[in-house]
Image (spheres, rainbow, N blue to C red):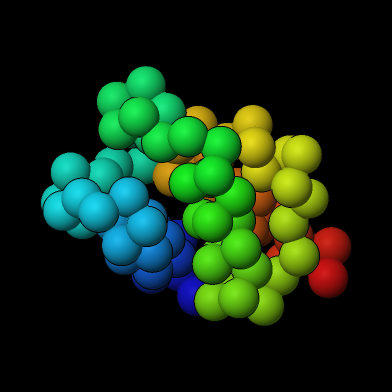
Length: 82
């Protein structure tokens, strides 16, 4: 899967979880500051990401993710580890 395909998949997941238009989501948009995502939203995004991509994310590390770019990096790392 290309980076762009991964981004589009994560963008769709995030838009659904945060109830926002996918078009507002960029790789570097701060989900917490700019969209007011809370820890429950981040945990839900981590779980949805695990299900969609068949990877295992460390929840403590996932909680530190601030942007979709951060989540993309986590998926890449988890994919290489698995």
